[in-house]
Image (cartoon, rainbow over all chains, first blue to last red; front, side):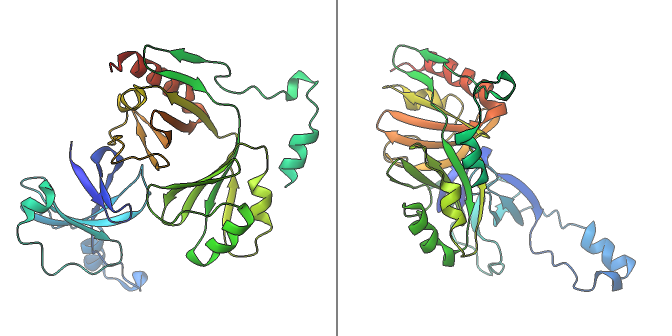
Length: 103
Length: 194
């Protein structure tokens, strides 16, 4: 079982307590009615789906119930880091990400 | 408050208003674990911002914990940290925590959930092993010491777990899940080899 670090509970918890909530850092337009069809499609439907590092929202559903953001590797399924909702997208990831997760 | 008054004056004579507690009287005793249903208690689901915590703690008579996975108890009343602004307050001394919260003018949301939850006690040397039959959390004393509390899962249901002693846990679950939770804990207790 994967252990995911919840930034609010400040510890690693079993994956069964968590739910994925889609890609993170997708800003909703302040003027939704003024969006063009193409822009709305981009916001609403188009996701990056990368091979490798992805930034996702997760929710500690059966714990503190809080949403937070996680950086995950879609190839290895390993969590590189997690951070609280509202915090900026980390520009630098931990160098030896495997160690951080295996801790 | 109205609810508390009604509770004390409600006629117990008429069978149509008689409250039938879920699981009342059920218990399982295995080699090293005892699973029992605990008597009804008053419960409040409390949400409050940081600024209201001091006033609410004073009114409730128990300091609301602000550290994850902890609980605080005083005079038969226990406050369990569930989230950064969320607590479950359990009163076993037959006082009404909802009425105490109602006296506080600071911003908060207190919802009475006394009859939403059923409490099950799991005690004995194999208590942690019995709960681990369906709960993935690390329940060693290092990771989950006495007084630790957490919302988590047990099999397919969500529970709130409180460690009341080295070999004693209180499992809070929703009433409609209680049959499943009790049965799973009973099965777990039979499997809990020490």
